Image (cartoon, rainbow, N blue to C red):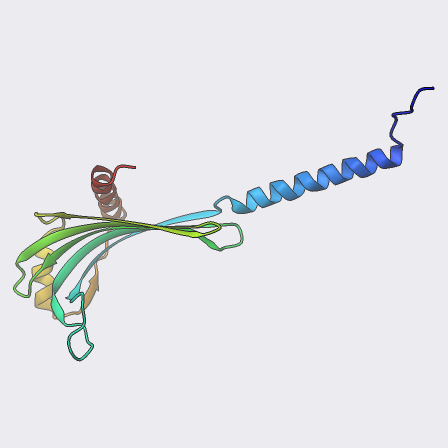
Amino acid sequence: MKADNRVSPGTAIKLTMLFALICITIFAAMDHMHPHEEVITTELVVMERLADTPNTDGRYDTVGYSVMGSTTKTVTDRAGALRQLESQSVTDHYDFQGRYEGTYLERTQHTLRRQAEAVQQTATRTSPVHDPDRIEDFIASGQIIQWIDLTAEEEQALADQIQEMMNQLFPR
């Protein structure tokens, strides 16, 4: 006597629907994990620079000026949750008289998956990257912070310059 290995039509339909449901769930979860939107912001800022540590009163003293060019990339998922944040900055430091003190480069990456991951890389240079005349104009203005309006071409040139420096210093 032979065993009947056939599956009833009702069972076949149920198994097919279960398989389809599992596939849809997996694909939906995978689609949800992929980046939905990537935004890159480039800016150039001239500002007063504060000390790294507080004084005896707990305040941070102004120790000079900085010209900082930066790019920030944010990546969000389809639900709008932040998945990745990458910041790259090139900052020229000046004293109160406008004398150049040094340039500091920094790349910071934060990736949010099951567990947050952060990577920070820094380097220094001994020559200014940004136009030194900007600091003289800033000191004369008496402002605390000034965002520099850039044309689309200037913004792209600054982003390219920062990216090139980062690629040289911090190869991936």
